[in-house]
Image (cartoon, rainbow over all chains, first blue to last red; front, side):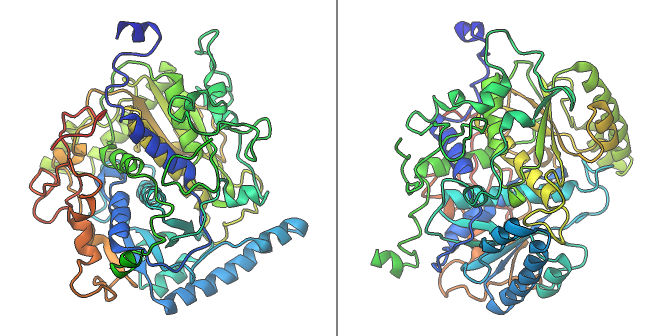
Length: 289
Length: 289
């Protein structure tokens, strides 16, 4: 304990940490999660869907408001209507790009509304228990933020269960309200396609399609104020936080068997060396280097 | 395989599921995460903070925009200014409640701005790469939703690492921008207090304080449209989705050693029988029944 203190690791620090395999389980899930657009027709068993929903329901919420609801959609007529809206919005979205970028946009599959065995809408009902909410004053959107946390939990639970989730974000909320008879004061937050998939690719779709690349995390870190990019509190001779987020060192203990190779597709000299893994791994066992 | 099919479990379903210990690791993290307001002064090692930030950076984002930035705040002068705003907003928030509810509000500790070893601001920069964004048409808030997903990932990573996080949601964004010199077009999404804590309580603070209780998840589930509360597709003789989310059955395989006791503090006959665990468990080993 003392020696840990001397090395700058307080003896208290590990006390509430989860066991290494559980900690790794979380990070595996986070790094393997993908926005999925290709689905198999196999139904998602209710037991699996139930765990995903309970995970979503255990998200943080402002004032413990739990402002979310979940609409399970299997009906193909309603989904066809959503698909029609999507097609209109996709054309509109495509019109915002020109030339080769537009061609690339049009080549991308962006949804699996009809193909997935189910769709799932997560909504936010602000002021569900009245207008006074612990934790809500000047920032009026706090319950929307909570609903997003529920989406995040559900997405991670799905990945751990081997279920793909794709967020269809180009829709029109007024139309979604109408199709699903959602009250006017309830906000549709996420329209999700949910189902099994043949592949969770190693890289995000938009990265492998060279639409966008992972921003080097060090470029997103500020200290004390927006303009300050160096950690003035960093100790001499130790790697800075900006170096740590880029490098593989922070993952070595947890992922000794993983690729920590910054020469992969994700990296271009400045990109994050986050844990990489074999895209053909099934994920049911830890991937081999 | 055939027999799995016969039981309604497609043979494909488990192919991409993570190993049971990893899957449990995710759910352990989700169920043990708490909004923390009591902090120890021990510093959070940069290695741990770096893993939390990389986890946040691997959140889903619309069009792979990654619209988030992270401001690490240790400076006590700036934190004192935030504390002042908090105190004003807390008084305003208290004024929204009356009688015993107001007294209870005033008895609750809601932040650890000065007490935590560090504060962390997660922001959203909309239209960072221009006004055309794949996945953004009618719903203009999609990048804000992405930034919330980053908050969620960071919060879960912190919990797995044994680090407490508390979201201070009663602030004023214009003041936060001024204190931290954040550009006008950047939206402060989350102001977080971050540090080790003596206790991750078994129940949310606002639940044990009897401020609010966990909503029974079955009451949040709809089928096909808002008004439809029964799953017409449910098979005869099998528990419905609404029953599954309430009951312990869906957790038995994954948590054979956990309490699945609906007579605990969380339950009142209608509440969710989510996995319970000993509040005195350190979380480093699976809790005993």
